[in-house]
Length: 329
View (cartoon, rainbow, N blue to C red):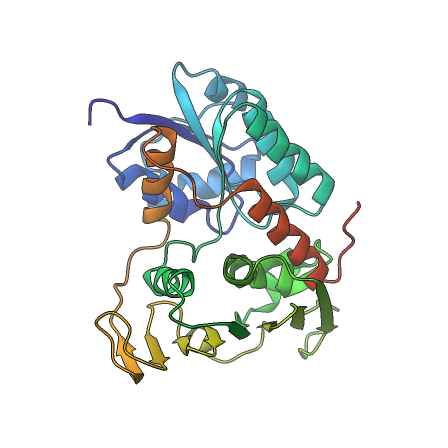
């Protein structure tokens, strides 16, 4: 495309950094102009990865001063996301900010406010927003197919070895903060900001590292409850990851999340679907691809961004509360 959007990436330390680079490079909407990685060890690792083959390496200052640069993917380690994102926004760039949005709610709010004031988009990197199974559920809720929602249950677990666990010890919120955040984002999209969040955090693994690796959060609403679980010891946990929404008009049961497998029950026929339980065919799309396609359309002014700053702030507040972390720091 002649009018490809110039985009760059700052950071390679995030767990999703490689996948984001791959998605940007294969998306015809973008021209990836460069990547920034000031940490020498992380840069050496990235240079060995095919996702970064042939990319231009540059400093942050060089990237942010590329002529007509429109957007930056912020893929640093979590502790550096907000500081780095704030610099990109100050430079007038739209950003794709990976998750979760740091540990400081006030700092994240300031970033969102600064972006809003400049008419810039902050797209969070929660990886199920464009998953076809989740999109079906979101639309079913909007269309009233599930009726009045009274229950939401989500599980986001896996197994993690000792070396990988060490990387999480720097964050106080454990697996709910790092992993559960993805399904909390979806829960807030369905039900909105909860009235109260009650966290239950445990260290349950045999590793003597103290990591909060077995967590449950209950989100309370006037007429509904949501339960979010995340653990790091579940054998073949990817296959039992789930997102289940029940209302007085039906239930949508997405399990596993990737590749998405969806069943739903309706109290009466809905669209082309029958009353009762049935399989709902949904596509399996590569992670992140639809995220960047949507971002391109938003940057070009072709559509309104579906996830507002108010939504993102409510998500981050809920993540911190669900992880047992302070909201005012």
